[in-house]
Image (cartoon, rainbow, N blue to C red):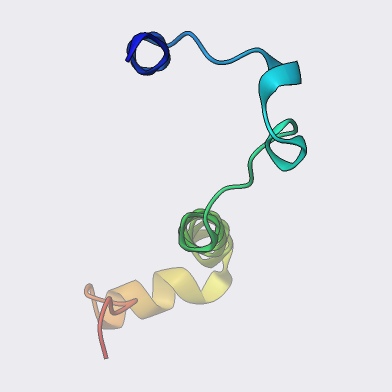
Length: 70
């Protein structure tokens, strides 16, 4: 119980007492990595799209473009 309370308050176990596989950095979940990648890719795409010469022409035709859903 005492160790569980310490861990809950933010005091981690000493590294030498952890199992070997947990001593290094624990990787993020795959879904979190995918979400971060997608967010970064969409941000880059939006910047490139707004710098494109087609951006002004397309927004004059359709204010809703690019569509969020198909």
